[in-house]
Image (cartoon, rainbow, N blue to C red; front, top):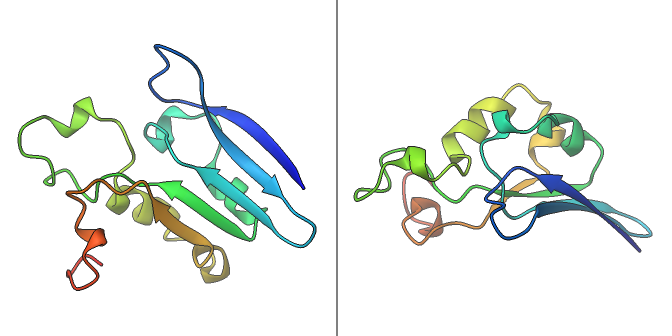
Length: 117
């Protein structure tokens, strides 16, 4: 097994933030638990997804209406709806690799019976 860390843009006031490409004997995975907006990164997430069997991606918040007491612009995690829109033109075989992780407790995706889920 091989684990390759790579730097991603995120709050770096104390240390770097990384994602990982995990290469096993039969499968490969992409693990990005924290990241700022995809547009702040010089790497195309679409290209990384093509090269793995599964991709776990940070999508803390569903949309801009989820947080009521602070501006969502102050929390630069990618929104689920932004990620879905960005990756919508990828082939279905690649889109099926994607799993959203790091869901905030306010994210409606955690409720399996919600319309968003």
